[in-house]
Each structure stands twice: as C-alpha cells, then as structure tokens.
Amino acid sequence: MELVKNIFFNTDRLIAGNSVKISYTGLFFQDDSKKVFIRYGFGENWENLVETEMQKTELGFQTEIELLDKGTFNFCIKNEDDKWDNNGGKNYTFEIEKPETSLVVINGNTSVRRLRRTYIWSKKLKLAIYKILTYFPRLITGNYKKKIHND
Image: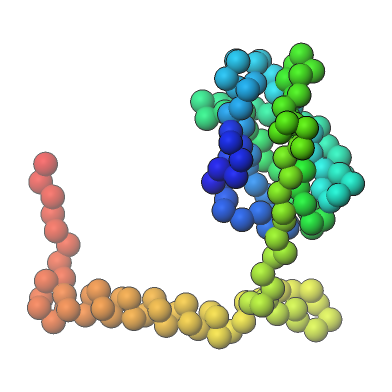
C-alpha cells in the first residue's frame, strides 16, 4: 500500500503490536545513494527513538519495524551524506490503530488468549459448506477422480 508518494507498507492498516515492512523509493533511491537510514519514533514526542539502516533492494530501501501502541508512527529518512528526506519538513506521520480485541477472550487468572468459540465454529461451518458445495456434486456424478495431465 502506498500511503505517501515513494513510501510503501506491506499492509493496508498499521496496527499496534504488528510489524510492518517499509519500502522507500524516494529521492535517495532515485539518486542511487549507497546507504539510507530511517529514524523513527512513536507518539507526538517521538518516544522510543531509533535510527537503523535500511537494506537496498530492487524494490527500494526496506526495513521491518515493530509498531508500538503510542498513537502515531513518525519517521524521516537520511542518506550517508547526512541529507534528509523529511516530507518537506512535516516528517512522515501515520496513525496506528488499536488491535481488534472483540474476538479475543482473556481467560481468568491466566493471560492465555483464545478466539471466541463462536468465531471458530463459524469458520468450521464455512469450510464444511464449501467442501459440500465443491465435492458433493462430484461424488453424485461419479466425477471425483483426479485428472491426470500428460505433458
């Protein structure tokens, strides 16, 4: 997903606790910089500030980052010559969503998380219906043998 020109994430949503792969194809990738670093932090005050080198690939400079539950994910990019790409002075800032907890049950004294049984049963039911609709007609017509491909 491209959120801003030349910044791509491997996901549609930034969710706290998940990791995200960032691809940067901006100015430093286009001018063939040898090393590119990302400096990032979380929340309005850039908490947990980290600077790390991004790996150069055919798809741009890439790195993977674990998202913290701090509201926003902020970053800027620099190259080996200490030149900055900070989104025109505004930095790159994205909202971090809270993880979905409606399907999670926290079990009493233990912190074991389980999906609700109704959710699991609904998945099993959907799978059973799919199998019935796919394989039952083949069974009735006798067309249930695997096809052999001769190349």
